[in-house]
Length: 220
Ligand SMILES: O=C(CO)[C@@H](O)[C@H](O)COP(=O)(O)O
Image (cartoon, rainbow, N blue to C red; front, side, top):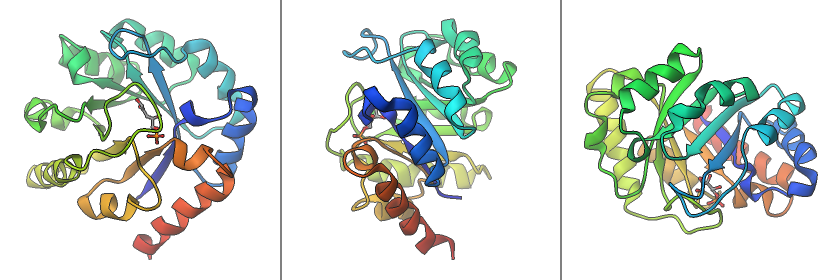
């Protein structure tokens, strides 16, 4: 199933609760929450208090993308804040297997994120253990950047790698995703689409529906 995960980083923070409820009611499947620590990525975003305040706005999946050094330190706090899925960067974890297991043992879905230039080979041993792989299609840290074209063949190669192993792992793509390029991403094999600016800049409800209409072309 194709899923839309609006990233609240591009939302109007004065009206965050209302914006989250609006995209959820319009049919967004996940709410994508970007936690940044100012160390793994240059910017600082928000953490547990914001996630827990938003939890009462919707029962949609809270998909937390940890752009944080050694995110294993925060698994129980992020769970308590209301996460359903935690995605950690392979580049940020010395003991990636331990961190993935911590997430699964907490009863949450586990994802691994890869920066644009990180090769798929880092997934070789651990791919069967995770629910989702997040292919970053911009360098993480900021919304509103342009999609990096070489990540498209990377998505195709990851889908092929999953198929060869009989895995139906979700492939999420994040960064510069728009209604203009999402068909290419679907055709490459991605099935979960993070969109920040393309949803929240302008009419978030209409933009959400536009993505869902495109998904409908593939789900008939
Ligand atoms: O993780 C990140 C940025 O690091 C993303 O989730 C962005 O928030 C996506 O924003 P757009 O590129 O869609 O504006």
